[in-house]
Length: 291
Image 1 (spheres, rainbow, N blue to C red):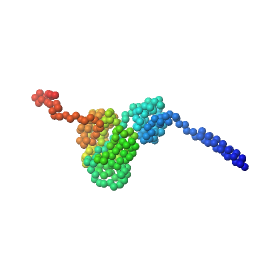
Image 2: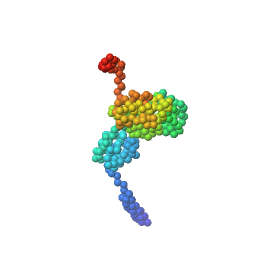
Image 3: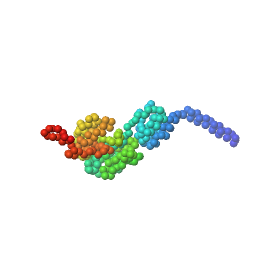
Image 4: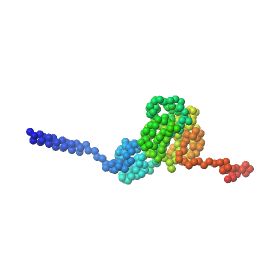
């Protein structure tokens, strides 16, 4: 009886192992070994900023894509993409590095509170309930969903202004803060040479008088910046100005004419102040300029 039981169990084991082997061969999924090689050099942030579900998904997309022109790891940047291109033998486009910018200038002084919110300290929840504690329903709510979403510690909430601030050397342009903001005031923009950028720090689409009443720093759609720009980089849509980072030449003429200081310029050298003594003088009799 013992011998029969051993033979029976042995036979079942052999048959089961054979069936498992056949099933593994039948349903075997081949994975290109290049995917593992590409994934190994990625930063393993799994932030989703590339548009794919984690680094594994991005590695798979790189291997199977005909070219790397439309693919970019925002955390690793051009250096990592060059290594990926070397492994796969594909060309990669030199994508301009980007950085998050906060398009709201409604600090506590410019946008005074008109009511008090006593609910959950969460932007998504507060946004779904009402427009906010100030008269501007477009502006930042200040509860820090963007800061919580950033796994790199690149965003903090300024306690004085109540607005988020981006720490440039920590920002990887992963886009997590953009997705987390229910007001859509955070944008990934071209970082620019020497990290210099010009953008409209406002998303208020109300008409000029209404927008200015709710926030003294709001864009009022006056068209002065659009008329001043010689490169057609500024457009006015729904009472709101927008500066294209691709067309902008960083001349800063638009910031000088903005009546509400809604246009921000970052990381530029201070403007040279011209005094009356240094300015060109005109002789009234000869009508000639004396320098």
